[in-house]
Length: 424
Ligand code: GCO
Image 1 (cartoon, protein in one colour):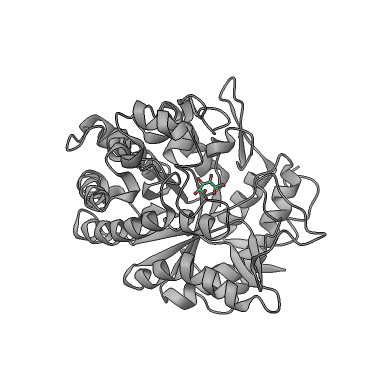
Image 2 (cartoon, protein in one colour):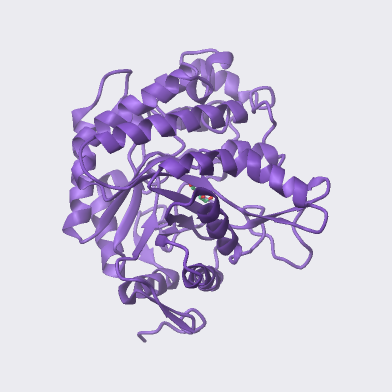
């Protein structure tokens, strides 16, 4: 089976600043990772040193055949103290974006990917309304400096993640503060008290959802009104929520609590960014465990690449705006499994295209093996491997196949089935 994508379809790979840049010392997550008793498996440290190695990474991405790079800019670097905007940090990102253009890569820029400056987290963070205004002000400055070089803008990454995890029972509904004693020390190290401390994913998930939604809407408006002319949207963590017979009501409740408020707000956006890794099943009493016989990945969810079809369909139908798949991928040490995953996921994407859904682009998560938050460097999502002692990059077969797909703008199912590299 082959499928030719429409002209102009965007193919890329994604990363996030904190996961690849290294030494993001002014961010709230840096404090969380290094606090005594932390629940993080290891600190991010140098990450992939992309702060210095971005020219190599961008050239690599272009050489593989991709046309776009989804990266995030780091608020903690750009506004290290409230109201102080670092021209040096903004100039750094200007060089990064210029480097993308020099390599024929369209930059898709995420303004917030989980991390915030310490001062934001110390003053209410994502539990405080004030953060919505502060975020919009930061976006306004960043757009004034960078907007002419941005091809696609994502305000906030996975703003619905805390609410989704709370609904699934992974996060306590009132947040982690009572349950994770290290947060008290982390708050102190940030110069605040536990009740004022509000880093993403560590805070009250429902308040976070509401503040992030407000922040997104304000940011979207200032970004649109600023320098440059590019589509602006939000990205959402979207598992395919499916009901076993009798589970429809619970599935719909989960959709309402975790997707719908954002998808409804996205009706006024230029697109929705869909980020899908797996599915979640619902029975009459709520979330169900993995189905027997379906492999469970290191991240704890099912190997279910076809999930992408359901999430694209749901997002497109509810929001009624174009879709970008801003993340899709698998954490595995076995690149053959990754190739098989992408083969199935792209097939699901093709089914959506064939039924006329307006999908404009697809980004693999991730360009690089990188810092996977509380899991540290254990899970490998990269299509390019990174040697942790030398920082040497080595593209995997999955990178070559996705790059070839991008270059041809055509999906060829047979390629994703071959055992041996196509060019050898
Ligand atoms: C997220 C983030 C990424 C993750 C990726 C793999 O979805 O949590 O956007 O930062 O690394 O999803 O888990």
